[in-house]
Image (tube, rainbow, N blue to C red):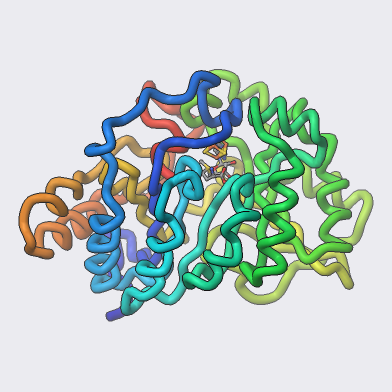
Length: 328
Ligand code: SAM
Ligand code: SF4
């Protein structure tokens, strides 16, 4: 079956799944230092429930799945889950977004289980700054994860770098230079006013246009031909470089007209838009009854609710959810 369309004619074939709202780091723009109040484990979808959901979604045309969180590698049983996910008929790609700190130990098993590639979050190349941003992480663990991902063939390895004025704006040239000598695909992402970053957002926001200008002042960038993923990044390359530089302008130049995704939260809500508070409960449908029809109906309902665009600059409007909860 081909992908279903929403009421704006967008083909929805991409699902992001938050498998846990917990994380081993506390990036200051994402999570409070003390962490988040623990949800009862019964509130969180079991892996079998997620797999059933994906089977139904695949029947409606979902083809690509990204596992995220929280920190997905912090959830026990994740490798077996990946294997079962990758075996679902109709699912052609399974990817993961991770902070990379636990990746060294499991990259090879993940590849064997059927994971295609990883995006690894890395906001700085400086050891001390990394510790300050994540409030507890060790940069060397992430690098060990990156190297093992490359060796294991979880490629292309993309690095997600959230831009923050006064934090990492001074490092963008160093990131871009790194792509010349390493097969790494750095994606500069605009900070979004979500959860923890809502209050201080306007002081920290750094538009990708400024970063691109800064890089182009130093090096020649040419657009990369062809598609490099399922998302909205625009990719460039220094001629002859092994990697690429991508820009994701979620705020300054939103790309909602090309949005192809739904999000499943760790506690079983379907979220049609990252920013919009509207959600459809699928946990009940998954838990009560063997019939797939209520699950299918929930997906169709979420598609009907999918707004034409986000209104991110209006802020987070007191929503309780954090990025880690929704699955960024
Ligand atoms: N823990 C994993 C990780 O860090 O890659 C996966 C979950 S994390 C919520 C997914 C992505 O969301 C990360 O790349 C993170 O940097 C990004 N993110 C979190 N809060 C954000 C914000 N306010 N604006 C932009 N990106 C954000
Ligand atoms: Fe954890 Fe990822 Fe949020 Fe950092 S961005 S606190 S690693 S969920």
